[in-house]
Length: 63
Image 1 (cartoon, one colour):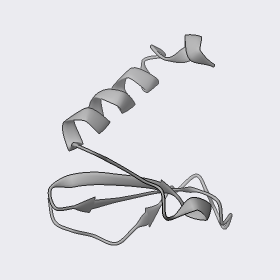
Image 2 (cartoon, one colour):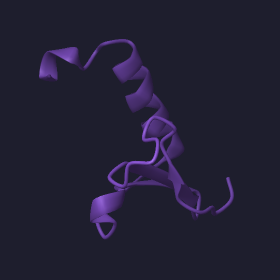
Image 3 (spheres, rainbow, N blue to C red):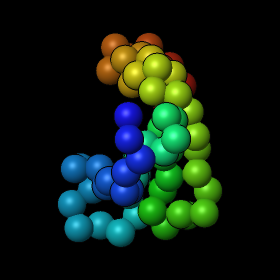
């Protein structure tokens, strides 16, 4: 994985407050664009596991 620029979610359209993601130093970083100074940094495997769990509905009981 190479370092990259922030990418906005395709679901955000032209809205300013959206989720953005990038790769940096072998990690994955996420932020909310309107709070750009707060960055969540994780591994690609951990993010993939989170996304898999969310898509499978395993986190629905937290809603």
